[in-house]
Image 1 (cartoon, rainbow, N blue to C red):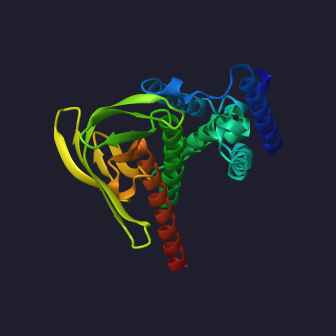
Image 2 (cartoon, helix red, strand yellow):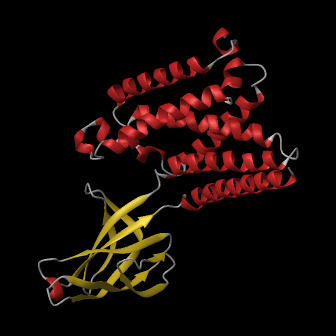
Image 3 (cartoon, rainbow, N blue to C red):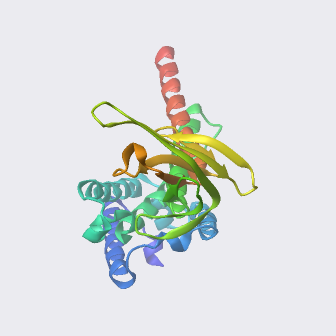
Length: 297
C-alpha cells in the first residue's frame, strides 16, 4: 500500500515504463503476440467502459493516493509519451512484416500495446482534470477539448482496430460473391453480395493501363440493390463497407473478366474522427484566445 501512497516523480515514471516494457516481453514470450481478434465486438465495448471507469475511479482517488495523483501529472505524462515515442520510432524504422518476428508486427507487440494503454490512461486523467475546471476560463475549455479528443482518439483507434476489416474480394463476370479474404487467407462473410456485370479497361498506346473499373450490383443486408461503377479512387459504400477497385487479371489485360475489390470496414472510425475534431477545435480555441490576450495587452 505504501507504493500507492508515496509521492511519485519523473524518475519513477521512466522506471514504471521500463517495468511495463519488461512485462510486455514476458507476456510476448508466455502467450505470444496480442490477438486483436479476441477483443472484437462486443468485448471491445466492455473494455471501453472498463477503461473509462478506471480513469474516473483513479481521478476520484487522486487525493488519497500518490500513485493516482501522479498518473494525471506531467511526471507521468512525459515518460509515457517518451516510451510511446521510442516504440513508435522503432515501428517506423522496422519493416512491418509479421514474418520478421516481434518487431515486424508492432501493433501486436505487448510492450508497444502496454505503453500505449498507459499513455491513454494518463491522457484520460488529464482530460478529467481539465473537465473539472470548466467554467473558470476559455483556456480550460480549449485544454479540455484537446485532451479529451486525444483520449477518445487513442481509445477508439486502439479498441476499434479489432473490428476493422480489410479484405480482398475476387469477382468474375456474371458471378455473385459474398465472401472475401485477408492477406493471410482468412475467409469472412461480408454480409453483402457483389455481382460483377462487366470489367472495363482502357490502355494507353504503350499498353500501360489508363483506366480500369468494375460495373457491379451490390446487394445489401436488407436486400436493396445498388448499381455502381467502381474505379480507382472512386469507391462506393454499402452497409458500412467501402469498396475500392484494387486489381485485375494482369495477364489477360483488356480481355480480362476478373476484378479484385478491396473491402474496408471500420465501424469505430466516426468516433476517431470525433476525437480528432475535438482536438482541432481545442487547438483553434487555444489559438483564438491567445490572439485575444495579445490584443488586450
